Length: 139
Image (cartoon, rainbow, N blue to C red; front, side):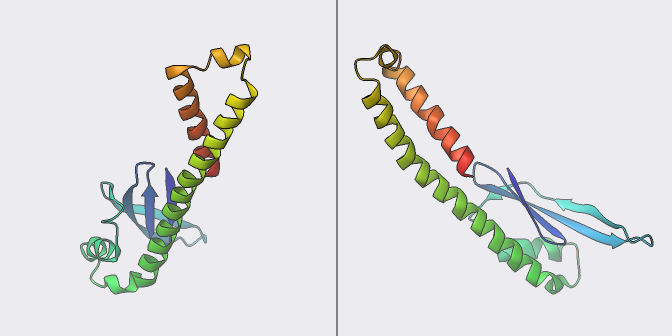
């Protein structure tokens, strides 16, 4: 899960590709402290539906002049798109890297006692675990 923020908007990007919108109000206190109060927190939606119109419609339900949020909407969408692109790239890289590591391990452990422990389902589980660790570190 990753949180992406602007002054009044937050997008929470989940590992399954869904995105949740949160809308905040900011208020400056006489002491100089800024409070950020949650106004609305929607259910997560698929990333394809998380677009300018969706966010604008959610803001229009709360504010008469949602146009003042245009730059924040654009900033948030840019950051979300960048985050999703990085995650997608990590997935692609991890497949190549984990395959190379698996081949190296298989080659290095040939005729070795360790190799006999990595057969069938156990080897597949090892490969999946390795891939997941690589993806997590790349993100």
